[in-house]
Length: 88
Image (spheres, rainbow, N blue to C red):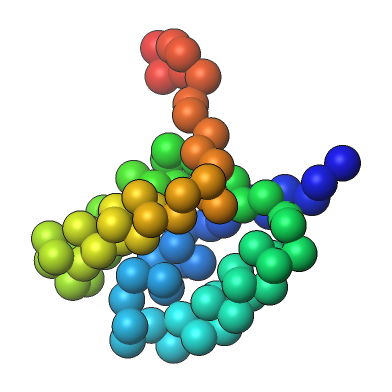
């Protein structure tokens, strides 16, 4: 069974913000995980939170950059949608 690693908000945000002190470490970690065929997963809650953080810290362009990174991941990052009716 392939290993899956959950990507959290701080890791996702670090990829979008070139000023984040964790960026280089996160990039190396993600590259190593992809090379080892580990699956990267992220929930829609984390995507929402990371986009809000990017917008608050860097404006709409930073949030857009984060979404571009997600779009370009082409299967390397698997989204985990919230279960239907979760917030009723």
